[in-house]
Length: 250
Image: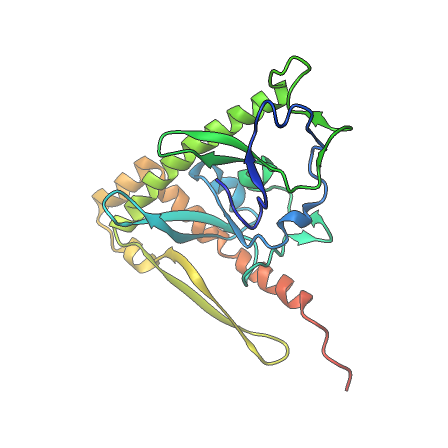
């Protein structure tokens, strides 16, 4: 999916327009993601993401019945347009969500059924020589571009599955707004909200049959990963404080 804070100039990959385009991969400078506060993650990513990033939920549009869709996200910052995992262009974690791993490519929806491989033409790594070509001399996609297409197709499939899966949390009314306030060194308060988290009391109150259903579907394991990941919020707060301007000398 296209994220305006990451994909600044997304365009469909075109055999004619991009015949001579090359890419300096892998991405070395992640400054392009410095304003990316969070990204969608698929259910299949929870185990890896929970090791380094807080996993929270947000409302993302509505389904066919007009009910809110629930999207799980990996959170990178505590305020808008803040990515605490980007430091002087480097990435401060050993892993990264799929959306970043497949950058500068992304999925562009044509309609409800069709999608296209898109490229962020605004990325500085788009060059005319010295990189990896998108198309060969015969105009056919290179192995690199074919592999990207397969990755995006797989990610699009698990994205749709994830949306359906997390409707169950919504229907069981297990999500609640998350908010916390932190006192900063200068005495001011940082308030963080706009996210959803699992309500532990409601989860514990579920009957045995529903808990077993969530276990069998894999959703219970994802909920536990989410809860464990919340410990990383403290890390983000420490990183946020470290970036604040130093107090003037007395």
